[in-house]
Amino acid sequence: MPTFVSFLLSSIVGGSVVSALSTLLLEVWKERATAKFDHRLEQQMAGFTHSLTKQLTLIETKRNWKAQALVTLYGPLIMQFDRTQRAFQRYRANDLYLEAEVMKRSNEAIRELLLSHGHFLSADLLDAAGLLIEHYDVWLAEYARVRKPDSLDSDTQFVFAGPQGYVFPKAAEQAFRDRFHALQADLYPGL
Image 1: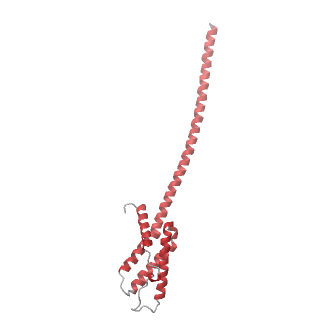
Image 2: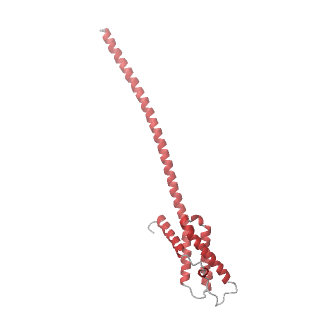
Image 3: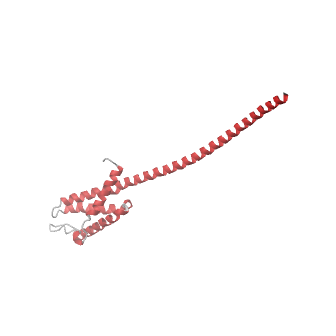
């Protein structure tokens, strides 16, 4: 019987040692697997966070660019277009003040806005901008030719660029109005 008891004790002790060792090894493996998983998850989350931050920055940059374009170029252009349109509707023969103070200044302002803020123009508006600038260049040159300081008498006629072949490009103006409204609707829906 002593052999059986010693066999039984050695089996119990051996089984306990094997069980304890197995449990220890399983815990070590579990900790390593968890650490590896956590590390991979952190890497993926860091990549996701970086990508999301990059996308949000890009969205914010585009929105800021659109807002700057609206405030710096498109809004002032629309106001000047409206100003010249209203002045033209008030047109009376030989109203030299209206022409000199409203038409000329607005034409100069529109031309300057387009030339100095061209970085806000998308490719589809470059031709429209070119047509407007060309019209205003011809109009201003004609104005300088016709409006000599001593030519402000009652026989002086209004200045037009159309007879020189540069009729006002209404479609170009409309393209800028459309862009203004599109940007405004995109940035400030419901206005």
